[in-house]
Length: 184
Image (cartoon, rainbow, N blue to C red; front, side, top):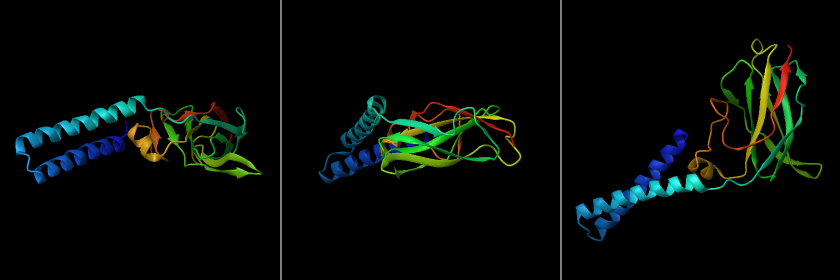
């Protein structure tokens, strides 16, 4: 789970328990029972968030990479990738990894819009190495998408930061991977 998820969980638990503690002092509950109940509230919040994280189901999403096709060769370090996503309000990004790399690189979010009356069209530019690095390598690219709001993704540990490397692909819905070969 991400650091942001832990910070959010702890903040919710502390605010809830402190609210209980202040409220119990206002209605003149003694300190020891008030502290016990504040700790009980904090524990309950953590248990509730754990259950939410465990059993909450993300909104179903289908994301497809349309162009380029797997096996294509590219000559530039930046490539435009396009595809479709259903539902059309989903957020889409891509993760890229070269054949020599261990980590996945999360790219910028794609812009999802309606093109020629077809909703859910997206397009974004991905980085395949640098001007000097990545030449002669294969790059695996996967589109990932989520139709859930940011708070849902934070509370369920599905939040991530773009333009950062990660060990595993984030837990969003995934497209079929494509492999591009960079020749220059």
